[in-house]
Image 1 (cartoon, helix red, strand yellow):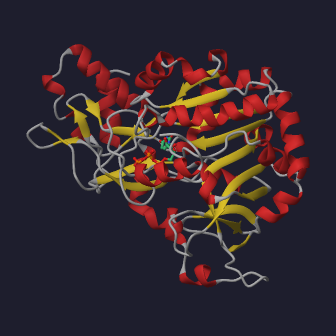
Image 2 (image 1 turned 120 degrees about the horizontal axis):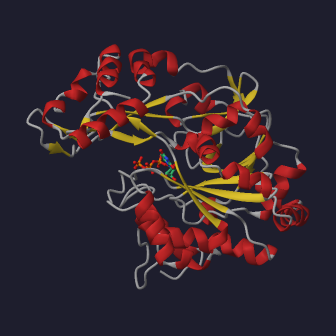
Image 3 (image 1 turned 135 degrees about the vertical axis):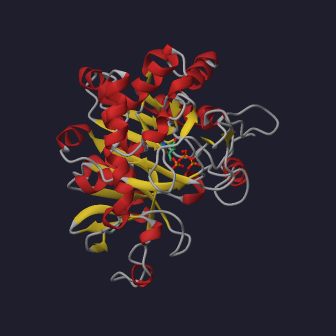
Length: 407
Ligand code: UTP
């Protein structure tokens, strides 16, 4: 793209402010800006003008979960089926590590956070240790795909390589980068983070499958015969990954996606609840939970939307490939570093604009069948979102200790 074409593009979308410093840039700096303008999807930004439409939901009804008692009764059989699939190389895992972790407030990728107290124990290390348990149990390696973003890829790859993948077999670890999306102020105007750089952030965890494909790794998925992919978040240090019992239950129940869920601590807990939406599996986000939904009861007299997702899903690959429509857009308020009127970089203390994201949880609604699979919260749900308080380094350390991990 030439500068003239970039100018025409930003004028078309009313985003001329991004060229404010164009005259003061060197040729190379200007070209970098032009390239970024070319790569930026400006159509999606238009969506912030009609956010109400984006938030429209279908008719929500309950979807019952496979609860602990049922899992316990079939544990041996589920586990045997799962182990068989893992041994046959049919199960892969995708670690979602492209997020910015702004709430934790560390400059490094979240996985590099040291949760140890008397020794070093990094988040990445906890996750690898959990996966290694399965590798040992099944006596087979599981391909691990790690999604990063432009913002944290180099640091992540360097860290993991320097630590020898914490004992994981290097040939089974594959990195790929997700796409970026421009960030705007509340009026939908793209902010600048440098004089020749638009503020941008990773485009949400929903892009993982497309990014995996763009990186050429879907070919590896096919050539290795991987049929199931366990997608999981970087910040839950206790979760079981490629869990044979979960894999086996999803296969035996003929579902094309399995979702690990925990019994909600309270009806208004900030986790998305699995449900049906217009008769298809879906997730109702905590901020969409009406009082009516919170009060609804099932035939057993228990809360009807009682199981929250923990961002650990098992997808059947061939159904992901059949997914035709794009995922809905989420416009989220975030703290976005920007250049002020004088051209100085400001790192805001409070949200100052929007990021544009698609989310993995929306994939569920595009698939025909979903198995909500209950796990014990105290064993598997220790997300690290904040430094202290709820869902924090502190609470995760407590749970790690309870589960026998030496910190
Ligand atoms: P969160 O929604 O907690 O976002 O991500 P975050 O970016 O890590 O943290 P905050 O909101 O800035 O504090 C849930 C999971 O999805 C991944 C994260 O790395 C985490 O594993 N994620 C999120 C991505 O991989 N890409 C994204 O664009 C966003």
